[in-house]
Length: 192
Image (cartoon, rainbow, N blue to C red; front, side):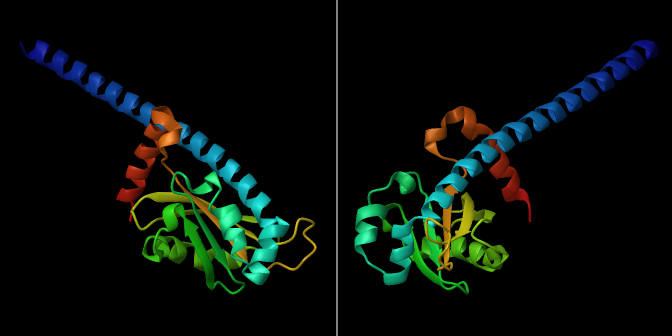
């Protein structure tokens, strides 16, 4: 009877170690999936930011505040369909524009602005980007990219900083992509 108890205890110990190993393997797999999705999202966001930040029309808009630009370009783009946010800062970090889906209130963008502003000094040239992860007013995590605003030839002096932020979890990603991101955001919320 003692032998059977020892055998059972040994088997339970092996079973516990196997479950722990499997849990660690699943943890690594989820981290790997999350990393792949975030890398792809960040890459797409960088392409968009670099395109917009070197657009002559945006450069002129920052110079002359022509509101036709907002109506013709910001109100018609799909960038904001799933909660994307555009921020433009003057040199020195003063917020000049915050724009998002349905003209969301500044209170919603406030935490994003507070996250972005102290990091803007890290942008050294028009050829550099700044990657960001910020928490929005809704508590969701946002992935962002910032770039200095210049003309299409990058010959004009920078006129400010363009920041685009997107929710890390979006309906268009589907469950296969969102599940690892939801898992990651839950883990990040537990961090101090």
